[in-house]
Image (cartoon, rainbow, N blue to C red):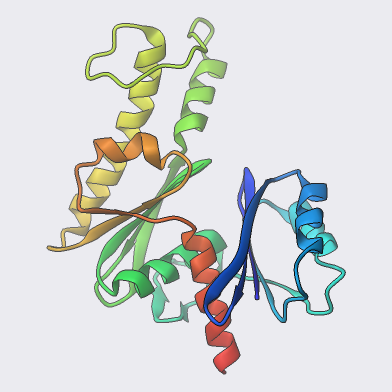
Length: 240
């Protein structure tokens, strides 16, 4: 089973068999030749599952790089209920497939109330109840996007890299510290709103290293939650 997580910046993939990941890799969102070269070395999968939040053009490219294999490319969408998780979104299918897959993976990992946080191009902060119900979640600009939008939208702010400080004394540190504090503050507030004793925060994403030290929450660092969720979805479909 080939699993693909197409985000706004990167495509992560894994080849799984009997619950074990045999191969895995990552490519930039426009690195189609590199992705096709990596896939050329793989055996033909019996199932291809994709979470794609990068748009229709990326979906077309994904179909093209998988075209040599006989099985169809299946694009996952959020449902009302799947793999033990119930979806409380007002319109279930509008929940991003990446968030849905990550919620399924989180539920199967902890089987308890938790906050599922991905710090990527965007930061998502999603809440699961102790009964496996997705309660709702936040979407905010990722750390890098916040920084870029502030620099691009303001005439005299420096583009230099900053570091985190409690009380920044230069512009670059002020921008970086502000983006970290805004992100960490949103996560902490949602954790407080969840208000369940013993709940965990599951943290992933490229900016997790920058955010994690400032959370001060019961926290588990996880990688590839979306791919793990796709694997669970695929395994369930094979059992039907």
